[in-house]
View 1: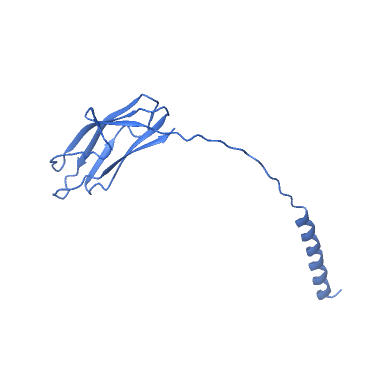
View 2: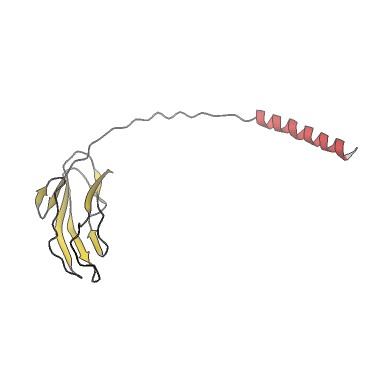
Length: 142
């Protein structure tokens, strides 16, 4: 048998095997119905024990290099759904850091996350008047 006819025979066998294999593939479909509920998270935010409205400016007054200031910052779950609370500050100036130790606290209805919100000015921070960032209180359904 010549190498040419051997090649043709091999191609024919592979083609038949491929068609047979392709014909043996089956598709199985699974069905999973789903439901969901849309809920509303509600919270009250307190600064130094005073209820503050959305958009209230927090004034950190005059701070010096190397100094840490703290405000008592409290979030209360006033709704009917359990959620996790996180405080994020965006746009904070270079050389200033923040910490709120109640981040990622799970709040059931009626409970509080209460901790000092601390701003620390690095000893090498540039002097000047700055926006101290935008504060975002994130409520994520648990």
